[in-house]
Length: 605
Image (cartoon, rainbow, N blue to C red; front, top):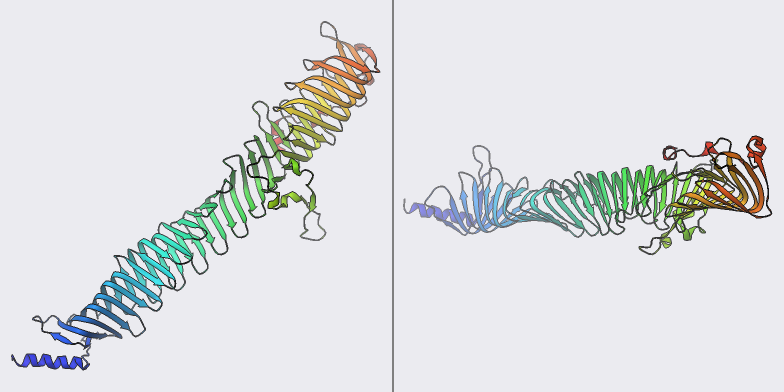
């Protein structure tokens, strides 16, 4: 027996060297692992395994494995391969490592040390891997890297599926290629479709932006990203935040929904809304739902239901409950629609616009059908233009050229230029100290002067003023001077019905102190009716006079005395001799029914 056993081993060794086949299928129908070549078989005291050394070739179920040495466990149908282990599958998959434990019953290889799986264009490198040769599914837990067609993915834990090309990575995940880098806690990556699915906190870094999110997908083929958790997109001059977001780095188009927050770092602008979309290539943006835009650290604030904006053309339009607040000028514009050009600083408000000028003691409220605001230097350049008609035989719509000005209209950085405000049609003003109506109006921030045109009427305390044109001067938000030009009439209440002090003339200039009328100068065709009192302050009659020029002096808001400068004519009429022909000048008319009664009337109109 001692001679027979070594002889058998020599015979077996010779058979392996000559590639003799050891083929078998066990009683359960499982394919058995076979050794087709080895340089040496080492005697083993145990019957549990066989040891093979040198140029070992192992074959099983369509795979070929080579190594420097191996242990074959026949009963359990698995093999341990050591040093320079290589696996080659008929379909071209290669595997390399320092050590492999391969189980034939389930085609699973446990690999350690310099593990590399080469599957077509994919290469997986790790230090420890469990890999199923048949299903091409591999898992690692101690760090690994996948390289595929210009993309590299590394992580602490990972799953690889060679058939579906679906991969899973967790803990310290890094995805890199020439277009972007992704840092993530957990994600999946489909090698075939190039779709990344983010499952936890992630950062996507590209040439144009950095994205912070938690869940969503990114398609590197189309550059389309869809994020389903609160996401932040940062670019060189902009930050966009939203509860959900879609973004395409190739087309430049992005949409955000839910508590949207956009910061323009270059122009110091902040926007919040329910939804927003923006195209970085075209410059077009739109925000809807509770829109709020704050500019330059709160210098101006705009709120609306929706706002559209084009960064390249500078044109913007806000719709629905628009409120524009200028905190520097302390003004507030409310309107249904506001159009604006960032370059020319031209603004047009339509659909019941109202302008509020806030002061500490007497705020001014104004309404009109249309309001315009422009730089004073541009007033000679503004032109009314017809808009293209979408349908034939429809009324022509008009706008203004400065709404569509280009970047050449932009003024020097940081320069605050005085504005001109123009209000057209059905204009009304209300303040505690003054009220007015007219067809059109202009107001200059440069000189604080209101100019009222077409049937203007103004009321101040107990006075009514009207003329073809009225010019109102203010200082420190108080009435300082009033110019009535052509057909001027100044009417003052006396406290008695039908008794009114009246001054008429071609030109009337009235001067005020602390919003109280103090002195009036009438030039050309001056007429007056002035009610005289006795020492007991009882009216005794009226003085009716004419003069080429006159001065009227007031005291306690009533006419105190009149000085006729040139060519005076006048008569005194006792109180009991008065009739309507004597009591009223020919131009006398009260416009009390037109007078705004309160700020609420302006705001609710």
